Length: 309
Image 1 (cartoon, rainbow, N blue to C red):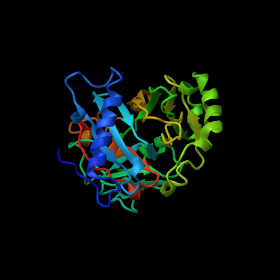
Image 2: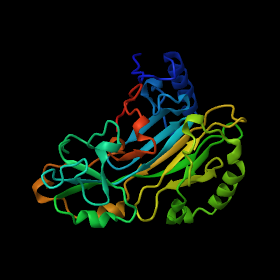
Image 3: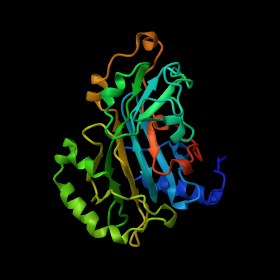
Image 4: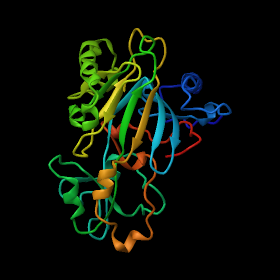
C-alpha cells in the first residue's frame, strides 16, 4: 500500500498503518459503516497538522448528492469551521485583496483550495465572510456575484462506550442558540459535564489555544450535538479524544448536509452560468473548511478512501 506521507510528518509509515487498522476495527463495530466485503482500504487517512501526531484522522465516507455520513476517528480534531463561499466574476473582483468589503479570498486561507467540481472555474474569485457584521444576503447583492457554495451543517453523534473512550468537543457557544440543539435537553448536562471534566483532557502542547472562547461538551453514548448557528455564520468546533482513562479511540458519527432554508433563499444563479454549473455535492470540504491554523494544515490524504468528497 502506497502512502503519501506529508513532509516533516511526525508519524512513521508503520504508525499510519497501525492507526488505519485500529480505526477499521473500531468502525466495524457499527453497522452503518463497512459492508462485510470492505476492508481498511475503504478508509481515508489524513494527517491534518503533520507536526502534531495526535491530529491523524481516519474517515469512513458514505455520500450521496445531498447528505454525507462519516465515521470519524481522531485523537485530536483541530479547530475549524465550515464557511459559505461566494463566487465572483474575476473581472469585477480579481481576488487576493480585491474582494468585497468584509470578505477574504478563500484561496489565501485554505491550503490546496479547490472548487467543488469541474464546472466551477478555478479562475473565478472565491470569498468567505471575514467580518461577523457582514451578512450573507448582502454579499449576494454585490456586482459580479455568480453563485454560492453553501457550507454544510454537521450533526455529531457519540457512538462509543464512554467508559472506554471519552471525547471533549469544543464548540462555539452560538451553537446552543440553534433550534436543533435547543430541542436536546440533555445538552445542558453535557455542557456541565464538559466544564467539570475538561481539565482532565489533554490538548497537545503545539495546539495550545485551540479551544479559546469555545465551550467544552462531553457527550454520553448516543447523545448528539448539532454544529451550526442559527444565522448560518461559521461555527468553530474541534475535539480532544485524549484522556488518561481512555482504553481505545472513540468513533464519532457525522451526518452533514447544506441547510435547505439557505439554499432555497439564495438568489438564482447568474443566467450566464446557470446551464453550465453543476451544484456541489457532499461535503465540498476542500472549498468550505477554514481551519484555525490553516497555514499548518495538510489537505492531501495520506491514503485516499473508496469515496472522495
